[in-house]
Length: 173
Image 1 (spheres, helix red, strand yellow):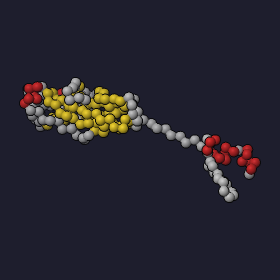
Image 2: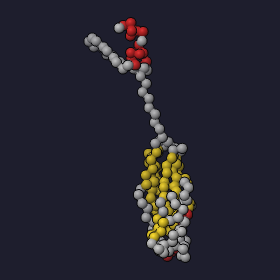
Image 3: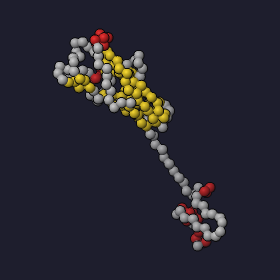
């Protein structure tokens, strides 16, 4: 056995066995000769969480119609990422869903706007992804506040319930 062991020392150690017979002493596998390599690949990991599963916009009052818009403090997004990241937003349809009649069936998605700041500037929602925020570094919890504004028109925006689905997407470029 000693001849085989001397002729093929790596093959025997790579099988993962170690024998020691006697008193005291020890038997070691691996060690400084780096026979056993332990490898790990960490891929990009990203997560975005919305503070609410649905967003209820404030109902407009006459002053909102006079101003042409009403504003609502939106939800917050919380981003966690082990690399650079980017969050984008979009709506999934070109028009709001409205009911019952006489609710405006052709209210455009662009009547909904978003901003990162209460005072704007505001950006129209579209059916294409638009970057909301990005980070060049990893983060354990960047909070991204959102503010929404809805355009109103006295002649077009009739009473009813309106909704439009939105998506927030996080990527690690």
